[in-house]
Length: 201
Image (cartoon, rainbow, N blue to C red; front, side, top):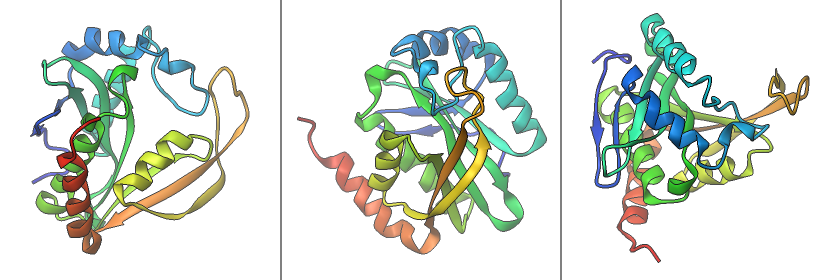
């Protein structure tokens, strides 16, 4: 299977479907929940920029470097976006990133299951040797979430990028790089399945 071939991944709490322009209105509503674009340490589209962001991601898919998904809740409504990005098909590596969810579904089983579906597809269908995650040094919630998945910190790319958020113009981003390698996937999968089996309190 091609790394950029449209695919749908289904779970109990979430569906990941190929991103299309038809998801625009749901995603605009989703990003307004918590005004997510105001977080200076992330790059989340504004409501006005959502159409352009959808087209950007679809363009990267055409170029062979991204596979973008719309994240749907159990009602079938789009509540966020995620991708395989920085695809290196020759070396069977992908990064799971450019992910955001509306505030109402953050820290729920939806995110854990979405990552579980993406990791399973990467390791079991695409035969990846490693899956990477990257996040801002100051995005502590994202770092904790990645570590809860079972990913290990490979290192920190210091002064990796120039932040272009209006509230942090010119600030330099230190990027934390995490990964899960193929030999770790069976244990990580068992861990995620255990997390998803626990009743919510």
